[in-house]
Image (tube, rainbow, N blue to C red; front, top):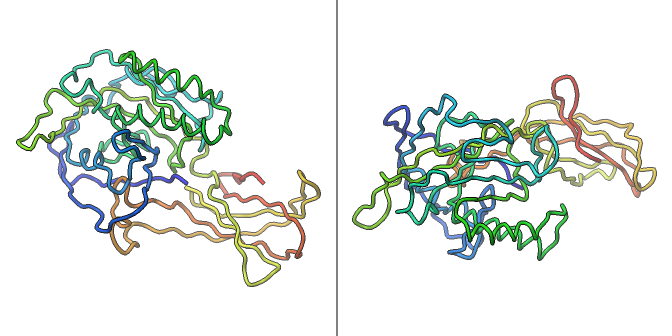
Length: 352
């Protein structure tokens, strides 16, 4: 399950249009598995998904200088789903009420004024995800990938769907064909995200950062990065991202007439569960209701790094953790249930 990742606020600022920070903290223990990033970025150089806990790009961005001309104004045109100078977002679902968790979207951009020829034809430029969309601190991104990684990621996701199944009926052939076409042309670029992650914010925005000609190399050939904002998608509405119940699962208690139901939301409210005896394979009367309790935790509640470090790839915001107990259950009986959270004037329910 992909959840929101909080980012580390910078310690210093050089001026209103640029920030410069440095942080060399790294996980101390060696791990034998990969913790994927929020957008499941893949890297051909390692032939593996990028490890969020040891992502070198995150470190690069923490020490970079971001140039953000006119961030408070209308630097680029457009709103959700419309052309925004160099960056466009397309929701593959035919709806106007926002992107649902697990739905696919496509980010497109065109290099109209590419001045990055001295940096591998712009392949080291970065697209980063910011949530909420109005986030002004460039260091507080949820995930980021170099253009070279984006091309590898899109291809890998299409190959995995082709190999292991295509539950959402994506046009995989079109995705693979577009990958081949992009390799023949540097002017048109896309990032197909087959499953948008669970992010507990009302909006998100993708931003294209290009490495400018001011980026320099020191004696050990590493780059001192200067990244200039070159494109923004504008706000992308997320459908009921705060109220929608996710991560629903059940557990036993010591009482055979009870069952515990856990679920997560981003919003604070009263959790409920409705349940009833299943009549047949598709219907049930949800005549019983149980009110639950809620809790959460913060990075300061965690014992040690990386769990108590609030930056990309480290602390994971759990959201609101809800627990309800279904009572008066009859053994050897099939029940149907749904969970929800009070929101405004009603309750946003899960499916049954």
